[in-house]
View 1 (tube, helix red, strand yellow):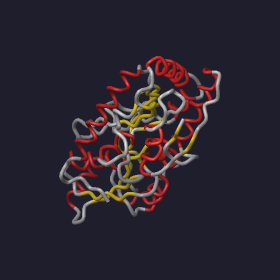
View 2 (cartoon, rainbow, N blue to C red):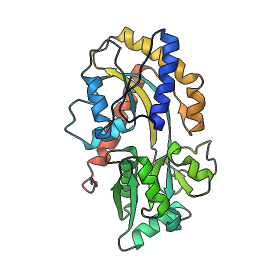
View 3 (cartoon, rainbow, N blue to C red):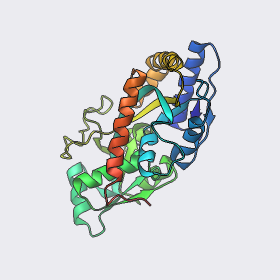
Length: 290
């Protein structure tokens, strides 16, 4: 199972839990191969070009779709080069402001972005990341004066947010959770259509006045295109069983996500919707890539 990010991060940890559970269920070892770089494209390309026999898989995240939206010259087709196997879980992002900004809610963020001469800035884990395009969607919907500042990973982005050198971060829950618990930052909104059970007092962006904002991050498994349906179905059962059991289920819930049980076809439909959504954001003439 190729993880298209470096070892040690939250995605890698979930993938390793899935791999261990699959090993038990399939009766053969499932080994993690970390191939980070190019926003996940290096690892994805390895799987796209692998033999379609079920022995090489991609542990994909929402960045698989967002990166494809901003990189039109990828060495693979994000749909035709892959066979969806199963979605594991999905959860909201959190909109977090720097303590130095002083904003207590989304209305104050928008007011600051529109009234300050240079507006506000927002950070991300890199161009094409879910943080980047979520921030872009917010900027486009609110018509706010905001500048994107990419970093090489969520860790450096978080450091800059806490220091006050950047104003906003559309962040995954695992990235910011320790700092929320320590009271170093405050979550202003969640990006999903419904409030998170982990943060029941935090409003959705729609509730906060940004209509139609429904964004989640997700995890799933893809196989090379052309993998036989019987193999896809066997892998789907093993992955769904793994995601519904501990430790994966508890890990997802702890990080504010919902475990998901899907068929390969249903995952393919969701992936198509994700690609269409992010391509629309990326095609906006004011889209920032830097």
